[in-house]
Length: 121
Picture 1 (cartoon, rainbow, N blue to C red):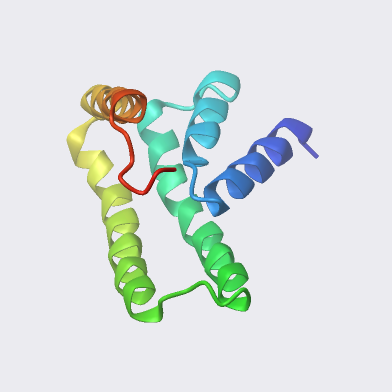
Picture 2 (tube, helix red, strand yellow):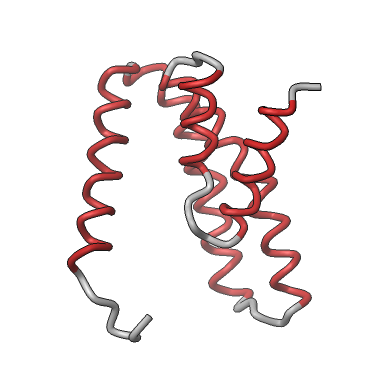
């Protein structure tokens, strides 16, 4: 058993289940330690998200913290986007996808640093 893969999957799942972007852990593990192409790592991450999100919904449903109408709408869009994105990566190409992903992370980081939440947290 590959302990590194187990830890990366576990960390990705836990962080992703909390809504904190666990895919970044998985993509870093796949690209840096397993030498997977960025494009394939992103595709794997999109597919990995589906079961993790399902488990997170089950956990939060038991806690009665789910608004089902919103959740089901987002879940449908998320599944369609993940599967579609996985297949779309073959057409876009790895270099463009890597730059797009990096730019997206930079924008999110800047937003987190400089824009305050209106809810106070």
